[in-house]
Image (cartoon, rainbow, N blue to C red; front, side, top):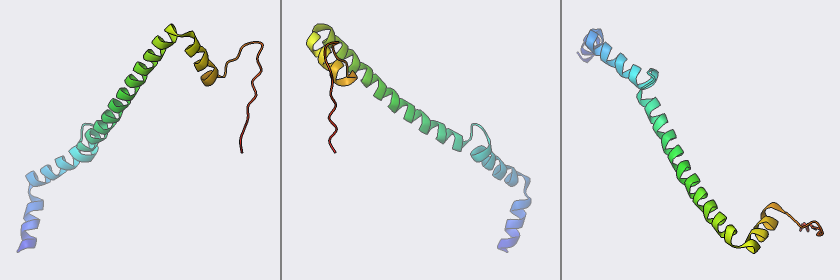
Length: 97
């Protein structure tokens, strides 16, 4: 009885069309559910990167303003970050093991 109902159901054109369209929309189509999920995940990752980089830009602009006003701070930053030195100086690196 139940087996006969499944046979009738799978012989029905509309049911087969419905199943095939669901499969098409889920896996094959470029605007399918899987691709939509993947693209929305990528969008959220890019938005979080955007927030990170805007915060970094704000921090750099604040550093730039402080360097414009204070030459000693600029020199300290250049020596520590970029290992700059004056012409008459020598720099020695100590590596601790």
